[in-house]
Image 1 (spheres, helix red, strand yellow):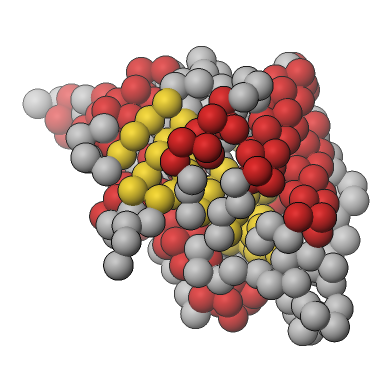
Image 2 (cartoon, one colour):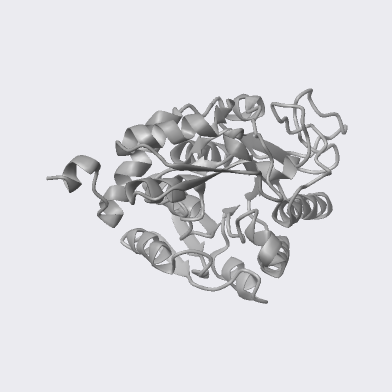
Amino acid sequence: MAQKTILVTGCSGFIGYHLCLRLLADGFRVVGIDNLSDYYSVQLKRDRQAMLEKHPDFTVVNRSIEEAGVMMGLFAEHRPDYVVHLAAQAGVRYSIENPRSYLDSNIAGTFEILEAARAYPPRHMLLASTSSAYGANTKMPYKETQKADHQMSFYAATKKACENMAHSYAHLFDLPVTMFRFFTVYGPWGRPDMALFKFTKAILGGEPIDVYNYGDMKRDFTYVTDLVQAIRLLLDAVPKRPADGVVPDGDSLSPVAPHRVVNIGNSETVRLTAFIEAIESATGRKAEQNLMPIQAGDVPATWADASLLQTLTGYKPKTAVAEGVAQFVSWYREYYGAALPSETCS
């Protein structure tokens, strides 16, 4: 069987790195693109990329996806069988301070990818969206068939716009597209702007942590390798335009396009206080907490109904928070040389 090529945007990011490792292990040829932006530590991204570059079937281009012609050139040269689009300007709160970067990367970048796919159609495109797309919805767990019209941040608005853009291309050009909305992903090699990273760093350093909404936050925490497994299985769940326009109950498949939205989450909510307790257990230290009001653009809870993912793939994410947090803390200590309390007292 001929080796398949997968194009992964944002390959040196947190999720992209883990996905590329998995795809390479599964025998794919991986073409990555990442602009190594300075939104957070460029060195962390370079270290991830260096791990990937050890593999002979990995090729990387360090350019921006929104740069005119870059994606068209990559598609023309490599003719990818599959595309997983992860590159984006991330972060809810940063989108309040610097919205233009979200317009450029998320909207313009996705447009460049869709245009390239129109010229060189892959078998299947999987584009990352976000649980933040559900916005002001209060009915939980979130299900893909719910309306999602009231995004609470510009980041979420750009992601929802990308879902709509991809639907139009799927309809007009018969491009099979799966949009996956993921829920609070965490794990080793994670982003420094995420709560787990910031909390671990502060607790190990003896510094206080900022706990928003006075700790009354709930999240559907999804371990990164569970997310990667779901994406890997979804590669083969190619949506098809329904011939009669009839969509099965519970399916988010479009009646007029080969386009589907799929949640990827653990299907349970964990209170922020319990998440902090898991970090305390893994580090062996008690956190000093600064209780603060909720931040602008944030939502108090997220909770995924992941039954469609299970129907399509037979898979259900299952890593417990205590296990996943312990894996992160172990990686953090190794990568940064951070010691546990017993080691600092010896």
